[in-house]
Image 1 (cartoon, rainbow, N blue to C red):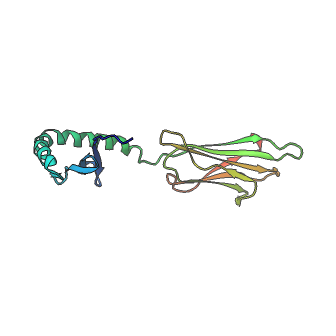
Image 2: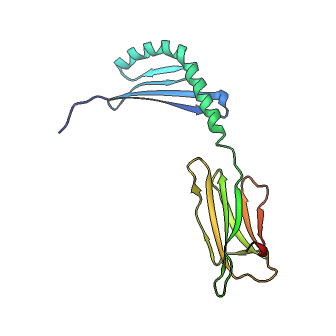
Image 3: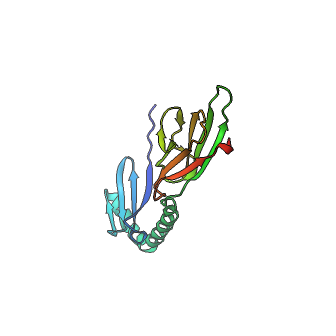
Length: 187
């Protein structure tokens, strides 16, 4: 069954052009699948796409002088809040033994990085300074739901006397890769 209906969509978006001082507001009104009215604060223009839209545009002109600066100010405030998210956050790294070697069972180490932003990060296992690729299981970066991420990597190995096992973390927020060393006494 088809029902006659009308719909009206009102959206506005904020764009920051290189700095919060250059914040632009774009307002769009759509009526029954057709553009009705469009406003751009940078150009300070209202464009009407129909005869009724032209009537609204004349009324909208009085609104834009009163309210446009308030909307732009709100957009700048949202931009300030979001700019915190755009800063790289260093991970909190934890290296621990999940299982010590026992009989014919290998030891298992876990290297975890928590609460970092943005996503790109690499965890690499080193054994006496050499990259280890066998017996390594890693997760993808997992989202915590608060803009931060976490990742985990496990290494199964049979400990040898006097060997050095490390988890190397490569990250934007580090000037150089960070090394986290496991000690046989941690087992």
